[in-house]
Length: 63
Image (cartoon, rainbow, N blue to C red; front, side, top):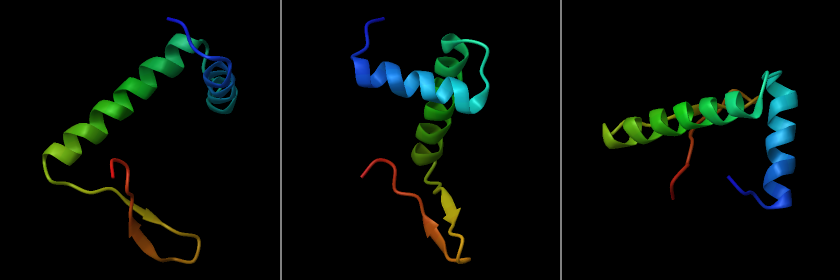
């Protein structure tokens, strides 16, 4: 898989932040999350985030 330099830097940063053992692990986890979000959207569900202020908002992913 070929990625532009900015995408490679993001991949490296995610690997470090998550302490993943490999780039494949980061990619696998990203696919799982992406699949879950799509399934939730297809089922009519929404994802909510709680702001530090306590306010709860819908997370807009695919606008």
